[in-house]
Image 1 (cartoon, rainbow, N blue to C red):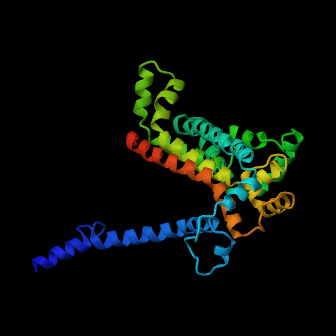
Image 2: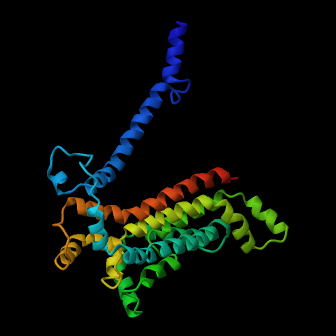
Image 3: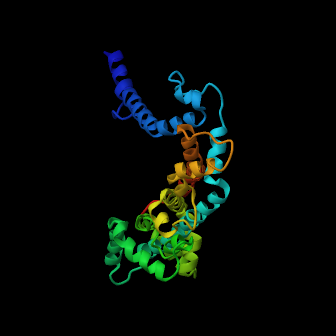
Length: 305
């Protein structure tokens, strides 16, 4: 009976959630979720390193018979990678940074100050996230066209500077909730010591909200990087980005191969190599900021009142 109780406690745990069976279930569940997310990436990486013989050989599934990097060389030339990468960073990195900074001011204002129609304004900001961007795209394009801003990177950066970037409402809500968790006693103590609101924001609020800044910047950067609808409308063909070049990758490849020697007929390996090159900067930023995000949470440890 004693052995049976020990076995039961080991399998189920004291609170069911800390038992061996629950841990096995959680590991299997996480492994399945990880497989779903990582399978397409591994599949593209494997195909991008295959030559045409490996792609047509049904016996070669995951590991290529030889390391074939020509696909990346051809995709690199097709995307015009280095100049296009700088263009992509101008319309993704700069707006993401600007949006993160601006919405932090807005979120702090809603969290710390009282003013007329505060709840109404917050509701309207969140409502802007629900309204499809296609509804406001025509008047926005007409406005930017009248201001001679279309076809320039400023057409993507300017809305972010005004707090109207891609999914800005979500980031306002993130900062609003995060600043509400910061104890007001810290502000009151600083005010007693003679600090003004600017000093409190830059010296107290910002250091305590590093996780919110990193999270907002990370998601903002990813959304701007994956955004092709707005870029195709406001930038057109004047500013080429990696994302837009990937959309028309086949056309660019065929036009370049017709005028340049050493190009093969386009195949799945070359397309996958181009896709890997486009998502590579985003993966680097994600892994770097993920580490900082975890460290920031460990160092902050702020609880609400």
